[in-house]
Amino acid sequence: MNLDSLTTEEKKILEIVRTVMDPEIAVNIVDLGLIYEIHYQEERKRIHVVQTLSTRGCPLGDTIMQNVEVVVSEKYPGMDVDVELVWEPEWTPDMITEAGNKAING
Amino acid sequence: MQAGLSTKNAPSPNVILPYFSFGALSFLVASIVLLIAAPDLTRYYLSPRLLTLTHLLILGWITMIIFGALYQLIPVVMEVKLYSEKLAVISFFLFAIGLITLSASFWTFNFSRNIGLEVGGYFIITAVILFGINTLMSAAKTERKNIENAFIITSVIWLLLTVTLGILMVLNFAFHFISGSHLELLKLHAHIGFIGWFLMLVVGVASKLMPMFLIVHKLPVKLLSYAYFLINGGLVLLSIGYYYFPEKWFMLLSALPILAGVIAFLRYNYVAFSKRIRKKLDTGMKLSATAFIMLAISMVMGIAILIGPNFLGAMQTRFEIAYGILIVLGFLTALVLGQTYKTLPFIIWLQKYQSKVGKIKVPLPQELYSEKLAGYHFYTFVASIIVLIGGILLAEVLVIQIGAALMILTAALYNYNVFKIVFHKEKK
Image (cartoon, rainbow over all chains, first blue to last red; front, side):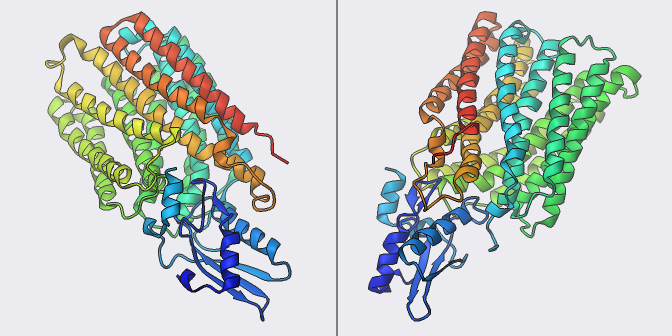
């Protein structure tokens, strides 16, 4: 996870991704800790988002990933948005941010 | 497709929705039958009207919804596509026709040969075999060899045994080829159906879904393996006992591992609920938690019945009826009511909005039904069970009728929500 060392452009992308909600929990996926990496590769015209899901076989998995791709592509027309799903490291509830925890029980 | 995703594996909603719709309507009809059959609940459990009620509840309501939900959940738990959607559709129609025929025939049943029962039974057993083929063939494709899958596969095998025994009992009324008491066979049929099919399935599905909904990780999965071997072992002993040694000590001996297995499962759920990140429970989860409490109480009642009748005396029959009602209308109904809200809205939501997320503002799945009404029927349901159990133990018909009226109200509110979800109009 390298969200602490994001460039300014990547931070912007993170904020766009923050609009994507997990439809079951009704909390954004950044605060749920599902986003592991964001890479803005201007020269390759590529945005690479690495994410996980809270559960294998999650029925809403592709919808969430598709949502990420749609919202980022909309703000970055002409860039190739690639959302990659990984299972390592395994997601744990410790990855939820404080804001996420508040939103879950809010 | 990336490994571990299941949306693309999900079957068409058109395969699943008839199961949920038919199930919800059966619950409403069964609640009305409960009101009509109230006097029978003070006497004996083998009356024609109670047989109609039982089969409407167990097959029309609970099994119907479980079949539908399972077709949706197999891709989630096993990470495979359903073997055949066509088989699932055929199975629905056979099951529905069989259920209607069977329920109607039981109403006028006089404990002798009944063609309606035989025909209804054949339809049901064919539907169940098709369901069994579909689930077991899907399971054969999975690469996920885990305890949840083992529970689901084993439960399907017990279901096949349950309906086979059911049809053998019906045929036995005509041909008398099984010696021994019909009552003992009925008890065996009920117990392998309840413990082997429902309980095993519930354990398998709940162990996957509860952590997902509650947001909790690192649960003591070993408890589930203990539960698997204890429940199955106990059930095999119990089945042998009913036929060969229908004696109290043997029954008790086989009930103990089952009880220990259920305790292991309840302990797993207790840990899940207490370690959960998501503290606030919606109605779906409240109903599920209530179901587990009812399961615990019914297990205590089951053991009390085994130790009786000296202990219960004249209360024995009433206690047994209350036990059955607590399992079917309490535990299983609470779980099905609750889990409907955790599955059905998502099926419709994915159908209507999957391609629109991110492009337009879409409602959340939980906005497809009225949480307020669901909250109301949580209370009417719990009140209904308490009043019903009280009425049965006191043998007061009026009290049972009040309980039944509360159950009709529960079913009506639930049906309103189910059909609000099913007929949800897409927001443009």
